[in-house]
Length: 244
Image (cartoon, rainbow, N blue to C red; front, side):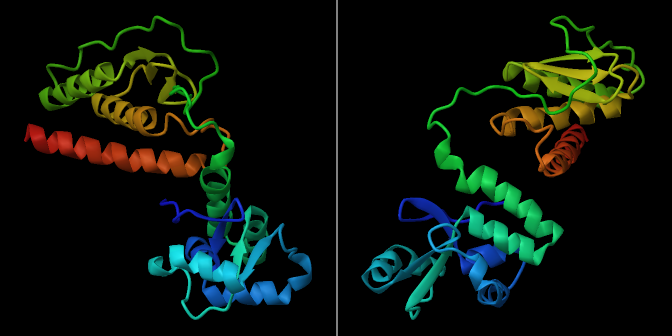
C-alpha cells in the first residue's frame, strides 16, 4: 500500500477529495455528495480546511502540477484525519476502513513521532512463552534428502546473520515461526521447505517492518503478514531459480 503525496495546509496534514477517493476506492463525486448530504456533521477546522482567494492561489502554486487540484477550482476542501473518518463511516466498506487505519498510522500522525527513532526489532508473532537467549540449533538431518533446500537454508541463515539475526529451532505451539528481538525461532518438526519459507517470512518483517510498532495487535496485521507471505514466496522462487 503506497502512501499518498503529503499535503499540508495551515500546519496540519490533509488530503484532497481526489486523494481520498483514490485511497478509499471511491469516486470523487461520492466524497463530494457525502459532504453535501451531511454538511451539518462536518465542522470547518475539525473535519476539513476550506481554501479560497489568495490562500487557494498560493496553495495551487505548490500542488496543481501534481494533478491533485483543478487549476479552475475557486474553492477547495481539504480533509483532515477526522474528516477522513466521517467519509469512511459513510462509505462503510472494508477497504475504506482498512485504508483509514493505515492513513492514521502512517500519514496523518507521522509528525507526532520523534524525527529520529532507534531502530528496534519488534515481535511479529508471539508464542505462549518468551523466547530464551539460547535455542536449539536447527539440525542437518535433511541434508542427504534435499540438497537444493539445504543450500537455500544456508543462504537464508547467512542473510539473517549478516543482519544481526539468529535463526534457531524451538518447540513453538501456536505458530510455525516467531520473530522476537534479534531471534527468529522456527518450530521443530517442519519440513525443510517449510523452514525456508518461515525464515524468509520473518526476514521480511525483521528487515522491512522493524519500525512499524506492534504488528500483532494492529488492525493492519493481516496486511503486514500478507505482504510478508508474498515476499517469502518470491524469495524462495528466486533461490530455487538460482540453484537450478
